[in-house]
Amino acid sequence: MPRHPDRPSALAWQVFRASEAIRLGLVTAHKLRSSAWVNLRRDIYADSRLDLDHTLACRAASLQLPPGSALAGPSAALLYGVEHAAEFSDEVHVASPRAAGLRSQRGLRVHLTDLRPSTSPPAPAALLTPAPLPALASLPAPAPLSPHVPLSPHVPLYAHSSLPAHGPATIGAAPSPAPGALRPTPPPRDAARAGPRLGRDAVDIAMDAAGVAGVAGCPEASTLVGAAPIAVAAAAWALPRTDPATAAWETAVWLEPLRAVGIVDSLLRKGLTTRDALTAIGVRNADRPGGRRARWVFGLADPGAQSPPESELRVRLVLAGLPRPVARHPVRLASGLVLHPGLAWPEFRVAVEYDGNSHADADQLHRDRRRLNQLVCAGWIVLHAPGRRLRHDFPALTREVHAALAARGWRR
Image (cartoon, rainbow, N blue to C red; front, top):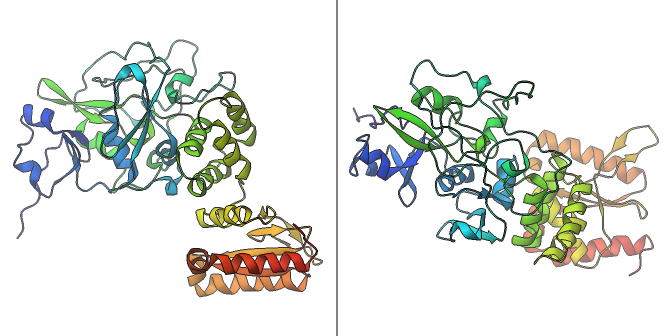
């Protein structure tokens, strides 16, 4: 029978610094080369049972963040639940004050700012005992942003909240709220898995196995090993990140437009930010490098888009010189039924439907074809855009849409 991987309970389901684990006698350099662990970054390892996704990459990068830094752009968007914002192999984007001295390296893209790091004092370093463990409900969640606080690019999430800012430190039990203060409500179990799902619940399992309590907004938590603590990466929901509007602005400036628009579409669709918030941050940062580009991307965004390919199709049609379509425009039929074609030009009664992976399901294909036939019977021209044509035959697809619009009276 094969031997089960040897994992100390203090490191089970955790992301940690190898040098510290070796110094405390939890593992050896030889054992770290076993199948029980995976090397994520220099000196940073993780339990190999955790899914290799961008959330895990963000947790690993958080162990290197100095005070005042935060995960940003597409990395922050992923932590808010935009699953397509980044993959495991993508660089982790970080906004960091120039004075902090953090520099880009393999797998880590650092965007330096002139903003000073927060001077808020760190939480007291109180060690935890393995039992009894605090209930998840007693752990704080990130405080809601105040609508009265102006947002600036690269300012970490916790700089806009009531939580203190923290750099790498040993974090103990969460302090009690001041008398009369509102106690933050912890996120539901599903919210703790923001971004791609982990192999097990990174909040519950990590605390159950290692006796860890984290403070929202802190890059590290601690677990007791004998008389000394070992720092481990915080759960995904507690990682420091820029707020959603700022993450959208950063994404628009840092990424190529097709990908950026898809991420901003998702942030809008999920209600994480609003058009007004994007307009405001665009105006405030109009004179910053990339400000004009960000406003252009925001202008292309549409919360009605249901998937990144739909966002890409819409933007590419606009860039090809066609009028801007409306995502999920409601079309009321004579029977009273309301349909929502993927992309529509209501004034010309022309629609384009993206055919993605969902159309591999025979039942879904049947429902979609019936719905689109009803549109045709109501006088609409409905064109189909399979994913294959979007990737390999887009010029011909553009000509077909152009011809349909021209037949209904559109002129350049």
